[in-house]
Amino acid sequence: MKIDWDRRTCARKGHVTYAPDDPRLRVRLHAQTALGDVWRCLRCGDFALGEPHGSGPASEAPLVPRGKVLRDLFILRFLAIERAVRGVFIVLVAAAVWRFSNSQDAVRRLFDEYLDVLRPVFRHFHYDLDHSPVVGTIQKTFGYKHSTLLIVAGLLLAYALIEIIEAVGLWYAKRWAEYLTVVATAAFLPLEIYELTEHVSWLKIATLVLNILAVLYIALAKRLFGLRGGHRAFEAERQSASLLEVEESAGVMV
Picture 1 (spheres, rainbow, N blue to C red):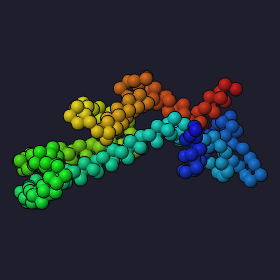
Picture 2 (picture 1 turned 90 degrees about the horizontal axis):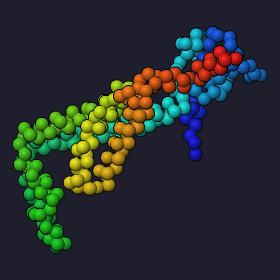
Picture 3 (picture 1 turned 90 degrees about the vertical axis):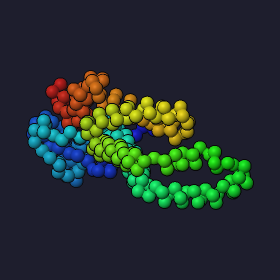
Picture 4 (picture 1 turned 30 degrees about the horizontal axis):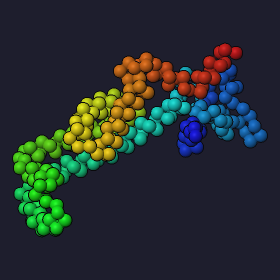
């Protein structure tokens, strides 16, 4: 099923109409009905009843995202939400590391007490907690220095900040955010691949695939780093998406 992004957006946000000064264009975008004047929407092409939202030279008409541009915006905002959720989660992890660094001995004693209580229970099910990889990893963290844990917390906060900045920029479709997302995401791909060599899980695989697809999609669809004609081709594509410019081209050809 093909999604009509133009009409879907107009149904949610309303139509965008404009009255150009050029009589040739005005007559193509305007009509009179028994209910009053109607103007053609620059996004979906349907006629909307009422006064236009703006008027003036065709060159000053609003550049309304439509078609493929709207689809790209939807995908960017999906990635923005994913980045925001990840950023918030990393902030919580950083806060937990910071709190742990300030009460490391107390947490160790509490963990050892619970371990003593649970050890006979797990032994009953033939599971040796003393040789558990999870328990071993937790016990290793107790040996980390306070300063080391603070550095880890700081690095996590820095990473979270990058994710949140990416989220805000992608939500508003800023080109600098697209570059930042591609560079930052690609930089962590080798680490994600290395983690898969250590331990394979569906979550790690899904995250890796999502990040690879995000890098390829943004770089190609947004023509970053000179791909597919670069920034000039990207801007030309945006301009050609304006219905008013399409109408203007048709008027010149007549």
